[in-house]
Amino acid sequence: MRQVLAAIAVSMGVGGCVPVTHQALAVSCSEYIGKPITSRIAALGPPKVVYHIDASHMGYVFEAQETRYVGGVPYYTVNYMIGADKHRTPVRRVTTTCKGAFVVLAPSDTTPVSERIIVDVIS
View (spheres, rainbow, N blue to C red):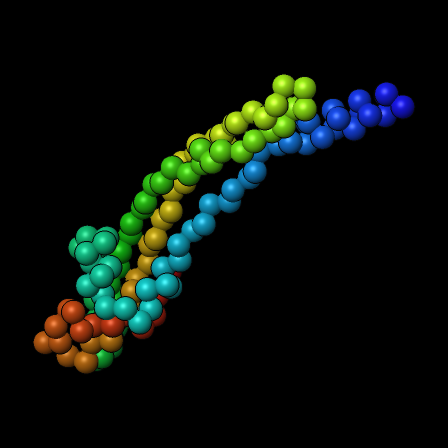
């Protein structure tokens, strides 16, 4: 009976040591559809290229890269002999790249940039 209880206690202790895995969430460029292009210019800087697609649409080509550090979340393991131990998940670098052409509705060249709305994203 003691061996069975010891095996259960060891398996529970080992199972508690497994850190929680976190997957990196990538931000899609398509989340900006319906917003003015000025928000992307402010966040990403000036576009690499601006070109006319047709009489009422323009293309803005951006390439941006963002690096964040995720992790360090505390988790606890319990050893019934000595108590609970606090650990942290590993910290790792996550790089998100958003590149592509934002298609903007611009009825004329004189339309202010603040009124040009993103209608599509071409990756």
